[in-house]
Length: 114
Image (cartoon, rainbow, N blue to C red):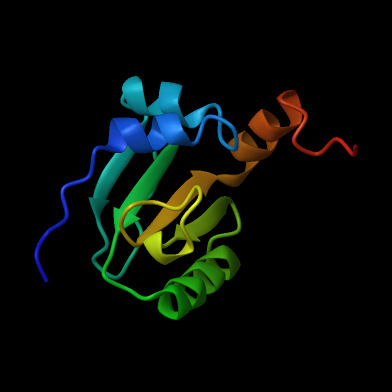
């Protein structure tokens, strides 16, 4: 499988509506993009880490579910290009600090009811 070249700047710009903080975090170097090697790293001072993988959606969901159980201080998400809309252009797992993410979501009214 040939490597897919990804313009991550464009991807994070496309997320503004659903994830307005990600572009700023990316441009400030607070989101790391790396290859998935079968295990997560600590976030340290990063806001997020995107692990590019070769997994299909079912495999990504299984890994994300396991990591959310094993690492409760983190929020794990997954994305696959087959779902279009706001999906990443390559299969990936996304690691974020759960408390920071909750705080950001609260500030922008993510939890407000219509």
